[in-house]
Image (cartoon, rainbow, N blue to C red; front, side, top):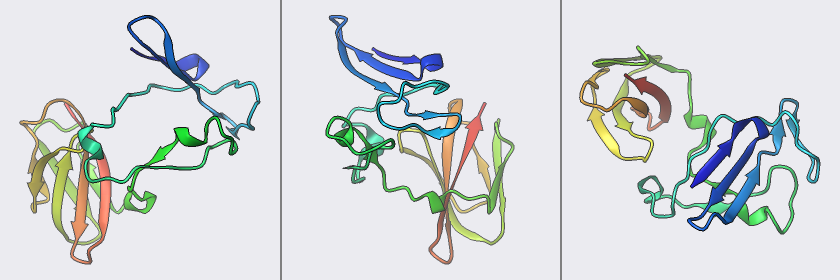
Length: 163
């Protein structure tokens, strides 16, 4: 069982014997990154999710350990993973509306893209299209990502909600 204690900024996994498998305390508060060893305050979190190594969204991705947020140490250094999604891929150059979408998602932007790919949170491709109006009526309610590929081989990603 994965437990998110939002007000305390703590994530805990507990096994069938009620033993703690691991515990993680969010090291970021309302003023920024805390120093290693500081008692956390105002480090609230909204939620957490568990993804096993066999998670479909990891297929074809290289996950490598990164640096710890608060400082490098031998206890927490191996606990961080990063993905190959570049922050530069997240953009405001394109707008998806309405969000939440009911039946049709419309995409507007600065220049004409080659294609759109709608993926669920697991990374599974749900819809591929070259039209800037996409029928999303058959998608289950939830959050999705729209990957926008341009004629200049640029890739941008926007998230949207489906009712």
